[in-house]
Amino acid sequence: MIRFYNGRALEPAGVTENEVWVDGAAIAYVGPAREDMPAFDRQIDLGGDLLIPGFKDAHTHSGMTFLRSAADDLPLHQWLEKQVFPAEAKLTPESTGAFVKVAFLEYLANGITACFDMYYHTDEIARIARDWGFRTVLCGSFTAGNDWSELYDFYEHYNRDFGPMVSAQLGFHAEYTTNREALEYLAKVCHELKAPVWCHNSETVSEVRDCVARHGMTPTKLFDTLGLYDYGGGGYHCIYMTGEDMDIFARRGLTAVINACSNGKLASGFFPLREAMEKGVHLAVGTDGPASNNALDMFREMYLINILAKLRQSDAAAGDPALILDAAVSGGARAMGLGDCDAVVPGKQADLVRIDMHRPNMRPENNVVKNLVYSGDPSNVRMTMIAGKVLYEDGEFFVGEDPETVYRTAEKYARAIREG
Image (cartoon, rainbow, N blue to C red; front, side, top):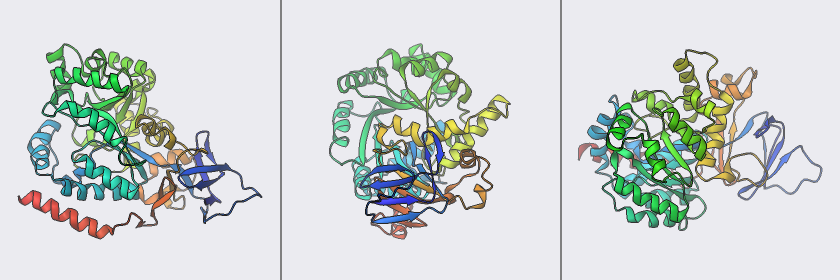
């Protein structure tokens, strides 16, 4: 067992001074110090630091680290067609795995304990996630060019064959990279599996406009009409959603995953946070891929989500730091099917992050939650634990591989793609 004491915990009711005990993969106790102490394998004096549920990156493309700062400064569709898709055509399972390892190290150093990953060569991603112990939910990235009958195998394979660190959700890339026949087939699959469905949704004006021209309705209404949302799910980006789209999300209990940095960098637009809050839409936070962000940093996401809400409304009171922090640590967990990883509560998985409260950006402590959202950054992450195992602590990684070797291997594959 591991004991965290002399610190604080971000619990569902707020910040407390409770101890947290971890037994195996789960949280065993949250409360004041007790006289009947069990035998601990390790006792960690937090020295006033804060334990929070790990961040859940609810939309990312981990393997895109090879395009970090190599595919920049173009609008979305030019970015995809001129830089991303041609480079991705050269990927192999080995190169993708090398690039994913870089992302996993970045996640750990930044306090991210799970990712909702949409990418290629998923067996390699799942193998690394299993071997390293990094919690990964794989989302299908099917397009019109794929064999959609493989959806069944995709869903069952990753929910069965790689252990507790790997799971899967049904998904496809976007409306504009598929067709109605394929979507109707996916609707049949999701009904048979009773499974949620995810995709990129309403990311640009042209995406929505072209969908209306093709189908006479927005992407959200199309998906709902076809029955894709009958068992939940949601969308990534969700910038240009109509009031009716928001109503569908609220009525169906769907989640909108906000990707503020990526959408800002690609000049796609602002997520309509106030409207989503007023409609009661469930929210989560994602970084998107490291080619369009370019960092995998949930602190930066939380900050920008709130700042852009203020700019969009011309209202300094717009935004809600507590809501966005909850979306980043718990909303994503619930969206990803990780309901046992969403809170510092006994019985939940011990996916925990130690936040250094002695850095100057955390002082003075007028409001801990607002400090995390408006002032926090990855330098405040002292430790990242997943399923009771410390995978990152005070600058060191405990994943069974040397980080410098990981970086060199990734550089080798990236250079081969650039020069090939």
